[in-house]
Image (cartoon, rainbow, N blue to C red; front, side, top):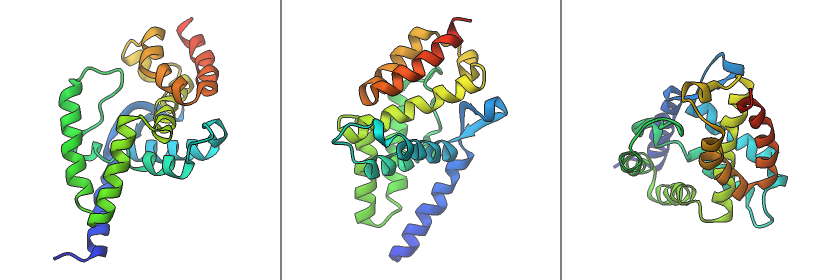
Length: 191
């Protein structure tokens, strides 16, 4: 039987593979694509910096935890770009299977806790998860703006798609952030 430390380090070693998963969003004003490890770190930093935009009942420490693990499942399931073509039901099943395997590497107490945090983020019903989901959606918007359209150009995204796929979730968890970002994004689509 594995020791607790063996289980924890096995999980951490597996988690390192998140750096190999490329996303559709560019970084550094379009120089290259972002990987999922970078994305998770960046939005955890967003939570720290933008904590003043969260509702009074939001626990930023829990939000950061969710953001650090929310994309772990992409190690097995891959990234499904928000504006890309994929079957959502198939993706959900692949992510559930990945969550079972990856969180199952941890000692039982941590496996249960991490899986519960991941499920909470995915369900986006609690104040913490709603704010976390808002940050997850807004970060690529700012990167696409910096890259002159980035993946929006690649996927032929319209302002209406941006509002429905991104804006609604961001506005629900961080309305002032959406107002600010939407004003900047709108200018790109009016070109």
